[in-house]
Image (tube, rainbow, N blue to C red):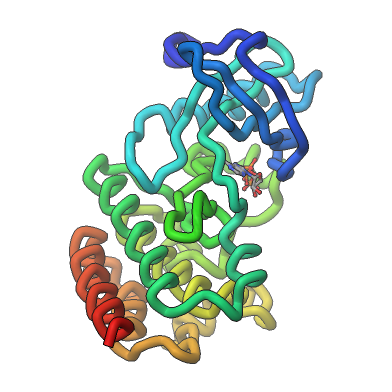
Length: 280
Ligand code: ATP
C-alpha cells in the first residue's frame, strides 16, 4: 500500500538471526539491517509465507500505525518488506519482554526502577493521548525492555482488531478482559479513559514484578467483581500515594479518571521523591 512506500526495504538489506519470539502471524527474529551504510540491530516480525492477501494487509497494518509515532519510549518502525515473505522491521529491544524481565530480576529491581518504567510508559501514553490515538491493549506483555533503565511500548496489534470483531474472534479467541475497563467489557467502548484504566492494571503488573491480575478469577467473573467495587489489591512495597493513583485510574466513571498528562506529572513527582530518598 502507498502508506508503506517510504518504508520499503530491499530483502538484501536484511540478515535474519535467531528467533526471539512468536507473534500471531509468524516468528519474530533478531536481525541486522543495513540502512544508509550503517548496520543496526533490529527485530523482524514475519508473516507466515502462504498467508493470503487479507491476512498480509492486517499484518502490515501494525507497521502503518507504528510509522506515525516518534517517541523515545515507543518502539520505532524501521521498514517493511512487502514481497513474500512479508516482514516488519523495527527497533530491537535487547532485553525482551517486560514481564519475563521483571520475573527474572525480582531480587534486584528496586522501587525506583519500577517507578522509572511506569513513568516512561506514562510519557509514551501521554504522547499517544496528544495524538488522539487509543491503544486498547496496554499491558506488561506489550512492553519491551531496551536496557535496564529504558522500556518501550512495543505492540500496536490490537488497535486494528476491534474494528473487525469476527476476524478478531476467529484468530485470537479472547479479549484481554482482566485489563479492560468495565465500559470496554460491557459495550466495547474504547477511549483514552479506557486506556488509562488499562495503564492502572499495567502499573499493578510492574509493581508486583510481573504478577498476573486476577490470577485465579475466571474472565466471566471479572466484570461482576469490578461492578461490586472490587479492585486489584495493594502490591507489597507499593507506596500508598501510588496505589491511590492506580485506584483513580480504576474509577467506575470514565470521566473521573485522570488524563495521561496529569498522570505523567504525578508520577514524575513520586519518582523524584523516591530517587532523593534513595540517596539519603
Ligand atoms: P500479540 O498480538 O499476541 O502480542 P504479535 O503478533 O503482536 O502478538 P508481538 O507480541 O509484538 O507479536 O511479538 C512477539 C514477541 O516477539 C514478543 O513477545 C517479544 O518477545 C518479541 N518481540 C517483538 N518485537 C520485539 C522487539 N522490537 N524487540 C525485541 N523483541 C521483540
